[in-house]
Image 1: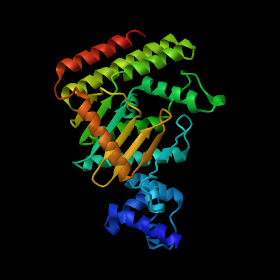
Image 2: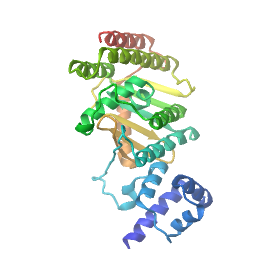
Image 3: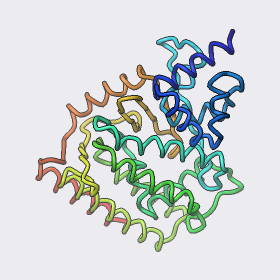
Image 4: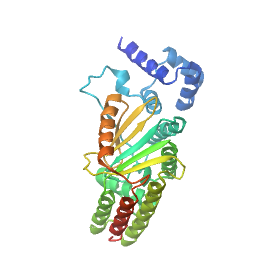
Length: 320
């Protein structure tokens, strides 16, 4: 009975996302790297889906594993932690990132979709575009949560070319979405600069490293100011940039698409707790709407506030 319950919930979720059986089989065959006949055997129940297959499908199509495993109580909504080994990724790590990147790229085909980031840290959809900023985040992550016996110096910390490719693909996907929203803590640059100071003071990064990070931070600000001035990414898609007037208790990323809602809470510098649960998403969206009402929009106008903000950030960076 339990097996039948799980199978029915899974097939219902698949049919809700892609009602056409032929198209569903094509999508699953490409996603899982198996023949269409093997997909049909799974859809008929002749062969069970493996847990890894279900996980990959859930990430790509945007539904919660909890939603197919059991009936969820309104007071026990769960989030799943996506743990990735960024410095020495295994094939399974790459597959998780590729599935997530694929789901991001589907946004450009949904004219009503929106992606966003809320927080006091440099959003991942921005930081991965800047070599030394991203390298510093990897370095910081390795010291906080990596194996102490394998911790590398800043100079030795490097992402693999495959990971860099996935990062570029991720940024393109975000900027191709019809609309993006950023709500930033006014001190997010200051927090990052203070982290740099700490690692410099304990002699884990050099003066040359600091100079490279300063250059990257100025590049980031230049790009962010251009996006705010134009109200659009270079791709031409709309971006709303807000400066928060209240303190954040957490950092969130989200996707609001017609067929799925994804909430991601940033934990452990890079790792995310995520949920496709619509109740979790609605709670986050309520908070987002509150923040929009209480924050200052610096794109699409408000020239004076925008200029003052970026001047303050540049001056702070130059104190390094």
